[in-house]
Image (tube, rainbow, N blue to C red; front, side, top):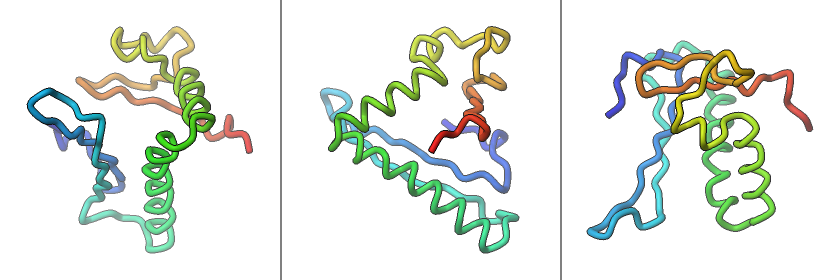
Length: 117
């Protein structure tokens, strides 16, 4: 259950819902984009953020279709938050990109200045 105390009016949230049957997770997921009704962004910024959020969601089918892309995404994910850290709740002091740990939410900074094109 998501506690809305973590959500701000300007947030764009991607919900990932696993499809389950009597045997467990089927391997499929549904993605939803949630935006607050009172989002304060102007129309141009809102559209840019919505497009960016859509692009993030579009990586899911790309990962399924393209092993090279999937491997690149996994490598990038390991740089920013190794899977081991997800289970161990990483320490913010050890050079981690984790900026805050709040209940069951881990905040990660991917740093705009580190983006390579």
